[in-house]
Length: 438
Image (cartoon, rainbow, N blue to C red; front, side, top):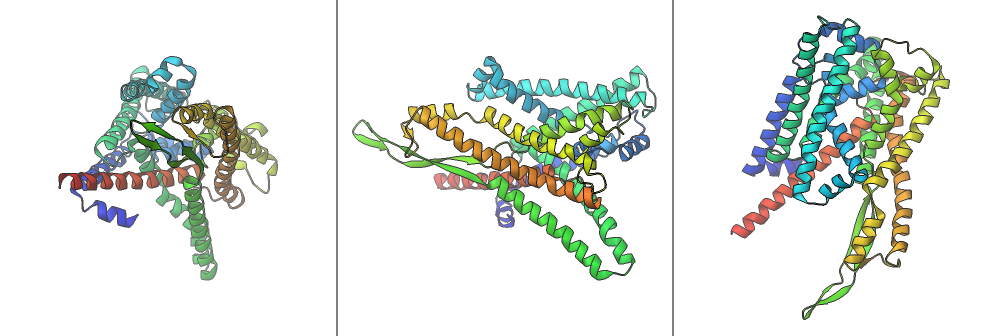
């Protein structure tokens, strides 16, 4: 990775793209510190400290701390991510959107435009809900129409501006603009999380002059983080390669085809989408009750909150963890069934003269792909659950609450690996152009 970056800085065009991306990230972090007008920042901070559910922490990690500070970027790009998921799901259900998806570049531009409009609508809805909820509980400097309108406009504009920055990074930077905006938000929270872990597990032992125990605690923390990252890398890069053979055919006077290739099927087919869906469903009632000022001390509410899972003194609340794992597996199958169509792949292979060795074209190929996909989805879902269980275990048993849970690490590792591949491909294209010019 370091060698790739070093070689990239030697190429002027790619160096400019990297510097442009870095400049945009500085703008994002600067905007994350600007307070939203009309909001009482200290009261908001106290609210989140007293009502810190997992979904609040999860959302705050996605916004780089902007949500708990109620800065102008408090909504971050989460409305855009939600909008993209909604449009992707509706593409399967609405024939008109499905036609756009198959129209190539023009259709893609139309879908992007629709996604932008939906993003603005979602931003308006979320900002209105936040302004009203915080206003009713006395967290605004003044609870009136003008002040709420200023807050709504500010938060919506902040989310739209981040969406624009993400698109500029995609066009003029290193690519994957929205993912990189999300990456910098998550990474910005990690230093404070490591400080929290140090103050909770290492500093008290140094104060007590038990240096060996302090060193062991530090090593355990580092080992857990490293092992988790390695496991996430394996989960993200793991894939099942299904061999495909293309038959030879006569074109003019030449025989073409006959080559062998493969269909790569990633182990983690759904990415972090199953976790996001499952986590949102589990924590949404808790978040609504907290915003409305209702009690969250009932058994159901405590069971839904991940803060109470794997707690040795209250294991009865861990029933929520079982429900959460079932939801992750369900959404892994659901989302993959929408994004990966074995029948469409089998038809395209048949039209191109391709077949899987030992499997007849048509329905046998569809059945084979579906059977393989079921095993892979289950393995990927189990991998996601393991990654999630690590922070839940340490939070429940040791009280080690941090923002960079399994979801955050999967996003960070995935975006970093994809960005490195983008830079390498840009270097490769540049070398080809240089060869052609020569």
